[in-house]
Image: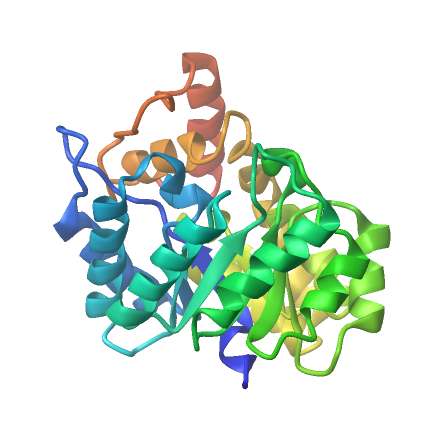
Length: 295
């Protein structure tokens, strides 16, 4: 299974809502078109940044359907189908495959804190239930559980588990995975600010938050790194670093949705328990957007 189509800059799309809290379908279609025009390589729908934790299954399926339809095969579409229930994850994954997804992203099961053996069995069971490429998502800061390098490398031997989105921030672990991964197994950054150093070590790209705001510029950074143009990549990295950091001044995706609203791309609407950011943080974010000439 060739996973190279998922190299580069993948945007973890926000899910725009209307004033009633329903999916803003027209707004979502506009975002898809904008990303494709700007050079985003892959679209991820229903990830953390898409507020998957508070979407109903019906909303998830509609969001997937809209993005897949609007992309129309112009770029690959990855769908977030992971939960902390293996059975539920299988149901979501099968539906994503039915809707025409090109791959699925499976977050590490959260809250119930499985053992490493439980993690291996979870991801293996879901992968066995689909013919789609599967990308594992390790983000212990959100899930409470780290997928160890040993477990991840064991999962890399499962035929359709093609890569990992690594957001542990643990460079010792990341380097161990990069050093020992089988040929063709993708390592994608799950932290915008660590993308460039990870790519310097051999990572294949990123699944990004900041790409929501600066899809073209961030894609150019990633491709400069893939091509070995480190000077250009560093220049863009340091230019965007204040925005990368500001996107986490409050819980993601609060700042990035606020930024997109300031840019006129979406309405600033969230599903509770997420809510609008504090005014002092909003002013900091606005200042950074002005410096980047985004507003």
